[in-house]
Length: 177
Image (cartoon, rainbow, N blue to C red; front, side, top):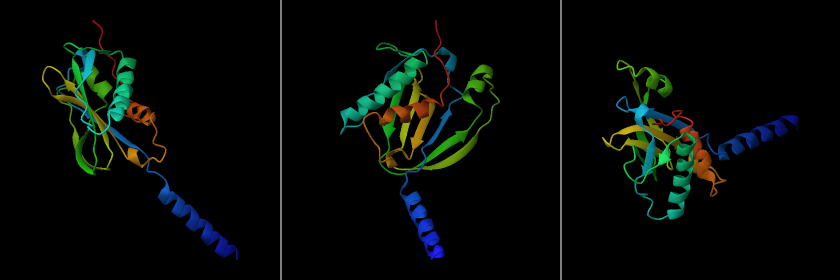
């Protein structure tokens, strides 16, 4: 009898674990071409989520909050950075890079820094945020979170936490002139 209860308990734990949402996967990479010491302002590229302006608003508000907390200001004319974001509606194979810690690299700007290519299989619903140098139109930093749509507690403020997790990977502050 005890053995039967033990087996049932083990099966129940295993089946519940299969129903739990996966842990959020967050990562980033950056370009050695970025002039991170020169950026102080930003603005957004047009939202591409045709079916949900509320989704655009939630994500933009969360990004704006994170950028302003780092000292960046919104600029309608001549921003240094343009911000693009997208939620991928299907699984995604993505090439990322293992690089030196961005904060350390910015201090040294080591031209001989190396990186290792890493191929990721990201799940449907991956949120990707790109910071683009407004002068060169090159993506200088990209942060992404996968497994976010598997959370059963998806609510209006859900993206604040996701965006914050992504921006935790971007510890740089705006320059002040």
